[in-house]
Image (spheres, rainbow, N blue to C red):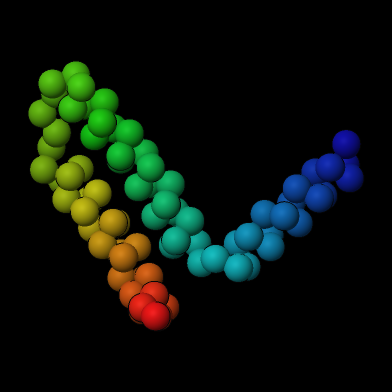
Amino acid sequence: MAEFKGARWEARKVMLEREPAAVLVGGVLLVVISIALIVAMFAHTPVPEIVSSGFLLILGFFFGQNSSRGGGS
């Protein structure tokens, strides 16, 4: 059991070293906000402007990351 926990910690540590924490947190937030927007759309519930603006802001962050890494060929 301890070996499994140690291996799992090493895998997480490698992932955090490879990707910045902001990218990981932004990805999780993007998925959560996307699900909330989809549920609100089908429930006919108005979405606060701050939620939709936050979604677009995080999405723009990811597109900016892609273009700064030399996404063009």
